[in-house]
Length: 399
Image 1 (tube, helix red, strand yellow):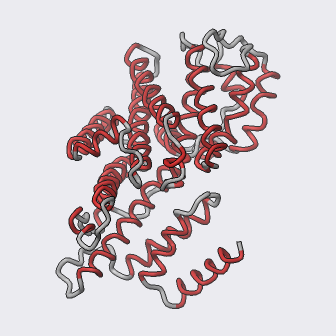
Image 2 (tube, one colour):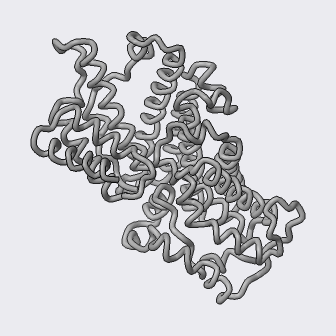
């Protein structure tokens, strides 16, 4: 702790007295530190990093400058690290982007540029993963720009945008090498540095798109027809993919590189599965609740086996809720296949069940966005850290 405090003090001094590339890189490393516990601290530090990067010209293409290849590569990599931190922090924290893609022209580095001075056999694979993560981050940036737009799009435009973004993600998939495609689709070669992080990032973007499509469709129809049910099932399948991915992680992968912001992808998927399991329209409540229970079991194993801090947010927010739902349904074993549907609970029972979760997650996004149109509320609820449902809301979901 003493060394950490000394490092932060040195960073603060350099940041405001003699900022340079080293101070910006130090801020990026600080933001990516795990466990990530300071939302406001990371957001403020990222803002300082973006401002200083712009001041030092990192947002401009240095290809025509009279600088060495090493400096060109350093400036390019540092800029894209900042962009990735900006995009994924925005997705996790529910805050607007700080970097506009129309205000920088830094090229994405090529694999051969990243590996030209390296002799390690694992370096080319790491370079392919790094470039794939940058290009996936660009797809995410396009999506977030529209999600955070406070001006409501014209009628029918949201569905058109959803289709456009799904096409962007499909184009990104098709542009990847065979090795990367097997990695993100089938989860192979996850022992490569950064591979598991890339797969979770891909599943998170896919889940975001499915939830956004479901939200826009629900707003447009204001009813629960077969089309809405189909898209809700697709969103649930995307959340289940995240669950199966967590189940298959082993210790070396858990101890590898992870963006700390991915913790909110796990929290969002868990929240969606719980809400889906409690919906009164859900005819397969027992199966849905079993999936949620197994998700919590998998997260607990990851945390206990390798002290995986990314699981902490979902477990702290929803672990005890799932435990109580299992008790109410008459099953303490989440692996049990013969699970009875959740019985109708009284309001006091639900208040007792969700009281701690209300304290932990605090306000719903709707509480502080109530003056905005419904569409903005729904869009923000897709990506902000999932808040706890009120007991009245959960009660309305039950049969």
